[in-house]
Amino acid sequence: MTTAALYDQPGPRAIARNQIFGVVSGVAVLALLAWIVYRFYDTGQFDSIKWQQFQYKAVQQELLDGYLTTLKVAGIAAIGALVFGALFAAGRLSDYRLVRAPATFVVELFRAIPLLVLIFFAYYVPLQYGFPFDKMWALVIGLVLYNGSVLAEIFRAGMLAVPYGQSEAGYAVGLRKTQVMTLILLPQAVRAMLPAIVSQLVVLLKDTALGFIINYPELLFVGKQIGGRLVFGLPYVPTYLIVAAIYIATCGLLSLLAYWLQRRLIRGKSQKTAAAPVPITMEPGSIGPTGSSVG
Amino acid sequence: MGEFFHTLTDNSDIFVRAFKTTIELFLIGAIGALILGTLLGAMRVSPIPVLRAVGTTYVQLIRNTPLTLVFALLVFAVPKLGVNLDYFTSAYVALIAYTGAFVCEAVRSGINTVPAGQGEAARALGMTFNQVLGSIVLPQAFRAIVPPLMSIFIALMKNTTIAAGFSVLEAGALQPYLSERSQNQTYVLLWITLFFLLLIVPLIGLQRVLERRWKVAR
Image (cartoon, rainbow over all chains, first blue to last red; front, side):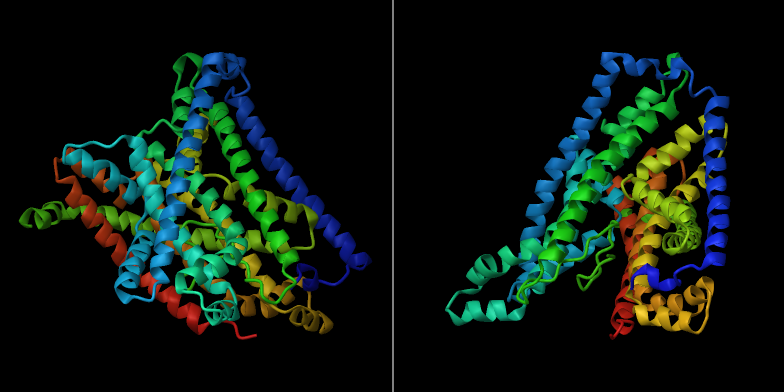
């Protein structure tokens, strides 16, 4: 229901009351912001020394490198997760129980284990047995296993969302199952899945920040190094504000893309044959077992 | 195989302590996030534009911020502002602030599943906004909210591991902690995984049951 149905068109008294509430809450928010700014001022966060190093080319380069590292890991992991997801979604949709059961097990397992534990596995276990992985690959493996499993569920939900008549028609004209999947279902499902996929890739991008915990030099880790410089008065606050702004801008743009795709999809869904859009996931592990998710 | 079990039995005190912390983080985080999320959700559907704007801004900012960054902000940046939180409090605040945004979205989309006629009928009886929301809409929205809420709590349970990177000895921190005691790291990780599955699988099962049973028939 539209939220407007929760309350009537306000009359003169309600308008006055709402305005009072509005002013009071506005003042409260401003007071909070003012307090934060005061804390900034009081602890000298506006001092030029704390911001000075961001003028240096070397520090800007450091931040940029961190950002590019984050993007690189996210890019590699995204490709890996899409491939992993496609393979295991196909496995879960297989007619053969021998293929279906292990694929289901793997997908369910990796969705249930905390991502950080997966990354620890990928990093510390090879280390213990004497063939250390690069930290980047440990991070990538963790991200691929977890996000790939979630993507597999999104792909499966998308394929199942295509109306049954479509595959029936495919079989009726004599296509094999593989052909029905790739020629009939997949092209229609991709449309329905695209917002959910993009949204999951945002989750993946956010999760690259876990590299911080295994000391992999991605954006957040670089931020800690820059913020920890005593010469510049430990500028953690300015540095993390900048790092947060970078993350929010990047993920925000991707989220916007997902939202835009979703809107386009709903508007364009006039024909009865189109698959219903797969709901957007917004949280690690939020996609439900039946393929429904937090929307 | 013997060593595998010894890893657990020799360090059972640490395992118990760490998983107790994990469960505490989870429970307090869940309750806090539920309260914060419901408040934010109410703000986002309220007739007051300022509150709506605050709710929307908060949710959008948090949704596009990695949880690890929220932790880092609280642990490294906030003390520099003269606000001193210990590691535990930081972990609670981070988990609640982060998860609350997702609870808010679940509440809001749950409210959206209640047909407009319900709110209209309540208003026709002369109910106020608080009555419409509290007595009519939220109780009906509850069924639609609980299954996604379970997903959010499952994610919260897994997210508690991130506190490991910020000096809280919970399950995720067992591995680095015990490797200093020169325990077999693979075994430690296997035990951690096993215990996490024990915590999470019942939640997943519960979620499935609820999802099936409470599927709103409209």
